[in-house]
Length: 207
Image (tube, rainbow, N blue to C red; front, side):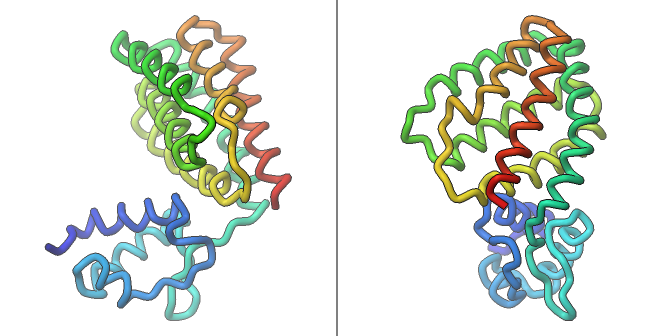
């Protein structure tokens, strides 16, 4: 069964984020079309959308997955320092009872991660926590922008050639969640800034 054009875009984006299509990979339209059960035309349309969002770049007549660079993560992080901190504060102020319960459940999921957790499992849980907070900020446009920024940042994290320790990787994220639940704005601001700083420093040490 052929995949809908929107699903093709989403599928390719997910494969790029999770490094199934690694940085700088030249994309073969015929192979992608065959794997999705469609013609080359909807694949090319999806790649044009992905190019507009920075996931792929045009190289002559070909598309390639956007390479990773320190300059790119620096630019992404500068925006996150402004937008993400404010989003977390709005989340603290606007969070619903159901979302508070969801955060408590996510805290339990973090504690259930054992030492055998894969990098992808850890990063997926971190992403889930952040998206819960972004949605709680009650600003759809901001949430969309932060999802884009965070997805690009996580691609950098997943490219690091080492195993993550769940407790260490998620420590600042847990601090952010607890500050939101406690309605402690000063603590939340510090934890949010520290979380971005640590992620950037970790990435820089491997590039």
